[in-house]
Picture 1 (tube, rainbow, N blue to C red):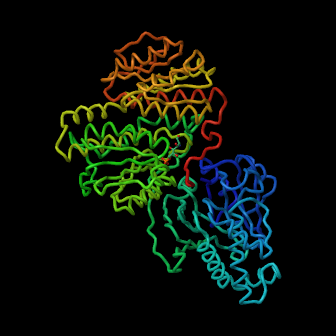
Picture 2 (picture 1 turned 60 degrees about the vertical axis):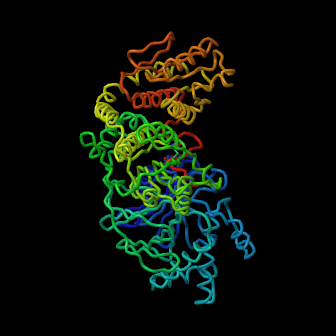
Picture 3 (picture 1 turned 180 degrees about the vertical axis):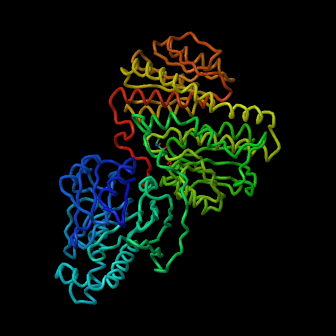
Length: 630
Ligand code: AGP
């Protein structure tokens, strides 16, 4: 949660920090702020609300060419989303400012100690406590060396630092590391101080942080898009690493041993266009409309006649069972894949919500392959489950979109989903890409077990046709989505019904509608309706039903008619060549993989509904793209 950025280079930092924040705003957007050095003075500007408010405030207040700056866009964990809680947070004595993503779990204990020492706090955040803890460690070092603290004689320290900043750099680094050793929980933190005017320091533990390596400039950020216009060369920081970055070089060390670590520089293939709106009104719409390309990208290099090529998995032995673990939309993709993995791989599969799994003391057999699915690769609960499974000695396969993310690095093996950067908080193209990869995986397992060749041939043929079909169909789906969305804006609640492979899509349809338009929606297995939920049906409680031309067709049709006969309005998404006695029929072309058309249809329905109702489509209230806290 929260987006952070730091810049050290040859250009004015403030506009670059603001630009970076605008690309990180999807991570949190209830307040924002930045800090820079005006000669030897630490300046902090913060604002409640969205980034645009900070931009206005900066325009009025900061006319600066400072080449070093840090910034933050917040998703509140401690304290209300008000200006006093916005980052950066200065230490009480003004010797440093930090931005932070994560949660310092023992902040109250640390705060109590600092309060006893006379520290004062101006916010409700754990971050301000961390800032003061670093300042306290620094004062301990200063007391030993100079027999007085920073606040006793600020000018003395600033002058000394100008004469010999190397010495102060070492003290700063020591204090930073000592404080972080005392902090429990999760952090990605970037620090700025007038005592080391050409530097920033950054560190991570269980929260994403990476560096962009430019020519004569360096970035530290939560995610690659923050600096994508300036460099695609990236260093991924690992847990308990500290980066000391100047305008001309960088060094990475272990926080505990202080030993230098040689880091590899990775080239990121994403381009800026992938992270821009491309003329669409919202990122979400752009990301829905680019799904044909995503489908193609997911298949490239992975199909050869009737063979599935996933060389990353060739060393993994065929498991007796599979357990899929994920959250939100990624969980829905996992639930969808259960059907295919069991059918095509003939392996029993269970699917778990990560936050439930990890605290239940689960019984996991050694022969289970764990598949964790995560677009961001940074979801705290999913990562926690991954780590638990590794401790239990199980092999973990990550299905992940973000290159170099924690899931990608910590899983034993990772299959990338190739969706490109997904900026909109509501996940769309990522789910489609996860479905493709998981379907390929199901076929791959069948192939390794020498079963299901005929079925595989049919699916591969259909997969190859799908990008073109989807490309032609998307504009038509959008028109229909508009018509139905406008017609149903009266609804305060919605059912989404599906059976078989459509069940998980019903869950996803409901999730999209509630997160975007704040309309209450429930996804249900069609066959479960008669066991209770049907009592809710009346003319004001409409249903969105998925009726695929599969073995459940007649049963699902009966379920829909039962809803209709209780005066419920129903939008039925069905395939050409089938029919139903219903008013609001929404046809999709006939294919043996209708899920790949139904999913975008439901995404568009939620999109149009939210846009029509004037909701903030790309940044729905209370949400953040990547949930890096528990
Ligand atoms: C759905 O639109 C949300 N973005 C959310 O449910 C998301 O899928 C979930 O938080 C998991 O994220 P991940 O795939 O990055 O792990």
